[in-house]
Amino acid sequence: MGKRRFEKMKERRQSIANERMRILLDMAERSALDGDLEHASRYASLARRIGMRYNVRMPRGHKLAICKKCDSYILSSRTARVRLTGKRLTRQCLKCGSYYRVPLKGRRGETG
Ligand SMILES: [Zn+2]
Image (tube, rainbow, N blue to C red):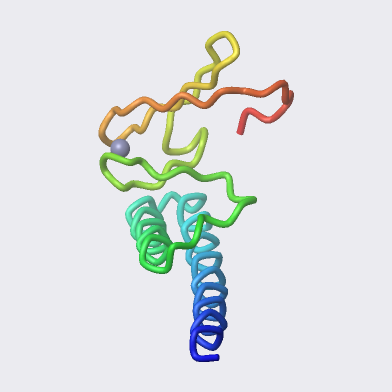
């Protein structure tokens, strides 16, 4: 009994965390589009921290990536240089210069 209740609570906490992350990521995206990259990175790293704490994955549907090195928000074409090399998409964080390779799996027209 006790264990089950604990599981339920955990699930609830995770869904709350997920909702918060979504809000933060929306804010990050909007800030980035406004050119406010400082806030964008801040919101994005907050979202990531929540995800790590509650063991929740980043919600899908966001055209974002977070630089693993400097924690800044990478919005394709805005804060990163995106280049197509063969079947791969290479993203470069403009803040610290890290490269990320994103394999393209037969999808077209989705270059970000
Ligand atoms: Zn970076």
